Amino acid sequence: MISITKLSKVFRTEELETRALSEISLTINQGDFVSIMGPSGSGKSTLLNIIGLLDSASDGSYKLLDQEMIGLKEKAKSQARKENIGFIFQNFNLIDELSVYDNIELPLIYNNVPSAERKKKVNAIADKLGISHRLKHFPQQLSGGQQQRVAVARALINNPKIILADEPTGNLDSKNGNEVMELLTDLHANGATILMVTHSDYDASFSQRTILMKDGMILSEKLNHRNVDVLVTSKN
Image 1: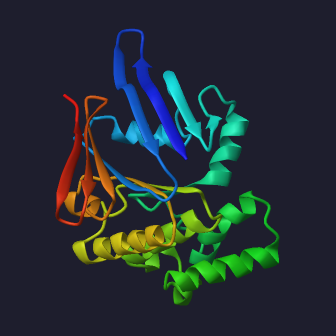
Image 2: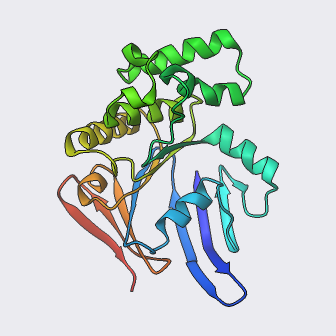
């Protein structure tokens, strides 16, 4: 599904050159649940943004569903993003002025889905995620966990090929955070492909494998068996 080869990202100013990613190679197959961990500045969010087509690489190859994304024009990137990728953010990124229903519906409007079909899809996903009784509420009337469920509903509404989650429990207490991780686990069990950036070893343990990054490079990769980690590769 995702094939990355020798991917690099360099930020340049007149006085400084910063290498955020250095020849990253990575494969994510359909149905994988992968976590990316590492200290601040390790490049994990930069990598996620490039995979999500929110940023561009300086060099290397990134293929999504066998199509090369590097060098793609912005209009084509936007289309690929809308058709294939769902985002879950740490800060929820809900629109306060819109109701829960309208927040979830928004991606369908961008994709020109007819009104009757939009209503059917919104009601179905809200029921699945247990927020049907909150559709007329506004984000600020919800708990953090409920807001993240709305964000997950919005991410899933177009049936994306891959879900990108950036610190999805970062702003939640342990109870609500655990509910979100159980929700992601259920989605994965039903066939979703998930790539998650996290600082939490506990959250990472829900995934199948964890990639550790430092200084823009992949240091190691391990398989997760809920509390039993098997080291499969190590690069130093």
